[in-house]
Length: 633
Image 1 (tube, rainbow, N blue to C red):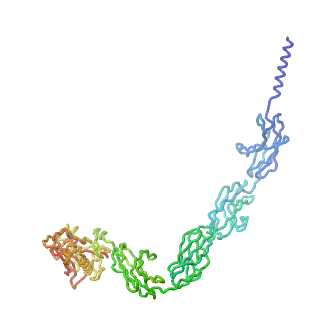
Image 2: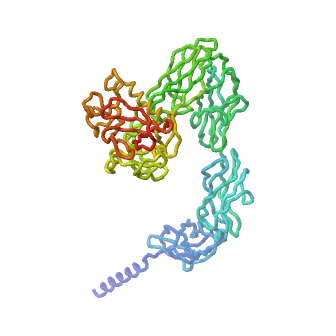
Image 3: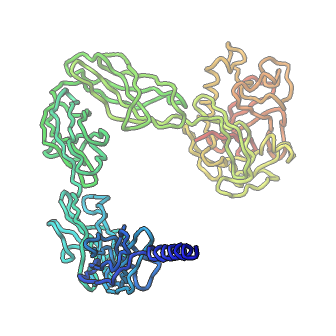
């Protein structure tokens, strides 16, 4: 029994020792051998000293800069007969690296006992060339990116270019700083329509490196042909062009140009037919009959203007009418009468005549017909804009063409109804009566338009300008205005009987003191329109000019003081301020207004009376104080 127990214990001890001998470990790896060092690569070699009887799953080398052990890169190798080696690339030039071998099995990783160091060689820089952009006839934009300095400072970088492949820094170049990184280069002084080759470059002490080569073509003028000339008439024709290439830059204008001389350009007569490439049709106008013209299509881009082939044509010979444009008349704010004369029908019946008109001398967009045949003719045009210049010309048409008279112009009358302001800042309403624009209130300024002060008078004077308060009460001025003697009304101007007077006198800028003729124009206009007559069978117009208030009463029909609420159909609003002549007279009884026209030692004026249906015209001593109304220039 004791012997059996000993045998069992011996078996247990032996089994335990055998288990201990079968424990597993990572492989043991030999040291590293380095060779073939370049600027960016090195060859590494090692071997498996002891695989520990377990298959090696992976082997290779740990690589890191000797000053940065956190930047470790594992490079795998292929194991063959216990040996493994590999080419380690993507290294930085001029840099110290540490290399250590490793191998991995199912248990873990084993490393060589020692690491080896090496320093990569210096080299030229690494650089790439950017695409060429923003190409014009003489410029372009390129650049590059220095991704490695080769271990040495990049002392110059840029792009170089030539019309031959593989340009170098001995050709044209830019200099765009130093160091690594991207940069942009502006290429200048190029020739249009030329192929160029460009490379980025970077220079360090090892030499100059170049990026890949790029080529580009500077933009050129467009390619264009001229169409045949068709539809030739007496004064018009049709032509056009076809742009088959824009030359690498947008076509910003195209059309045709023509002249009576060879090789017309855009400085001659020309059309504008838009932008871009393709075909287009142009209409040549305002040509002379029986005339030879030369025409070319044109197209413009940033490189310049190209012209198509030259075409020649002759307009048809005609015997057109002869027509002249005469001066316009009866001009108002919205109407005018145009006049023309067909002097000759050219041997062919004038089937139509009339006028073209508009607000632009270049484009007469409106027209009106005025009969046929030869001789004088007129047309009344309406719907015009006040205070606007219109251009017009007469035309006449026969079986072979249209003739035009000279271009003339006229300006419509100003639009009345807006207020006017005097030197003192007083504002006045205005009223249009016929072709005249009048102030609708009596003047009440204390200064002439040039700023000269007008003194208040206490006596009459034929030489010194004075103003007077109506009825000797300054409170009346705001309603009735001032009374002025003739020297104040005229402000040193000479007498004028013309229509218009051109005498500004005491009136604001742009306005003048009416002449006797202008007062007559006003009364004649009112007398010729029934709506201003109290009794159409008689010429009674006083009520149409008088205000509706402030007048003395009258029991006589059609007088100013009779039912004054019916007054002022013209909008003139005459106020009964009376007059001054070393005293104040007829306040609320009459209204008196100066003219700019002298009669001997006197001056003409107009008067309204509360008990009269007519307008009075007379002349008085120029030292008297009367009201003033101004009329627009």
